[in-house]
Length: 304
Image (cartoon, rainbow, N blue to C red; front, side, top):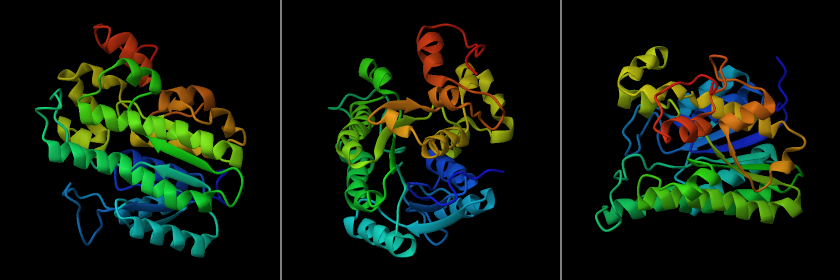
């Protein structure tokens, strides 16, 4: 197996589960050394109170062929993030890929609740977790990333710039958080491009994360059982799909052509030719517009 990222060092901030875990594992499969961070460890759980841990993610990175290193970190604490980056600098002397996937807001938003009815403390906490953490991490990590030309920053969000521009996303706070991350990638592109690095925003499609599978009462091996109740779930993808998107970007010597852009896992699969674990290429955002939002019956023909 070729490992185009064997000499690369990555930091996946927010790699405990979901997209972050999928990205970390695929970077590992491509040979990278991957630092994985989060607040859920084998010794202590975050307020999510779920079983996934950063140590588990690091083990999966190593099993995939890379070198996984778990570092507990609360990315709202600048001192912890600074210490994390200092450690990477001391141990590796470089940082080639920064993935800002910190989120932590699954329990903090109410669907379709207007801002005056939404719990204010939860809404503001969501913004801190989803926006402030990314800014803190970029502030401390980018000087190390810029030591060597060709660095890549991936801001992980939900929705493409085109889709989010025209659609209300869940609630005031959720909408603001996900749109802010898109804008962060745009701004970072302006700041990093002239300095030899690239920044992009990247969204998965309808992702079969651990939390999503639990929500539908299924597992990865029987996820199609959920289609009886939620037919459009047929377009869903594994977290490894967006991971393969990041690995493809990180291994592309011409990745700068995407600087400042909004990208999707499905779109990049068409660009680079990778597939999800089942060999398909779900194009979730095109499906969402052309089928689900259009009120058509679920049919993924031509979309995966």
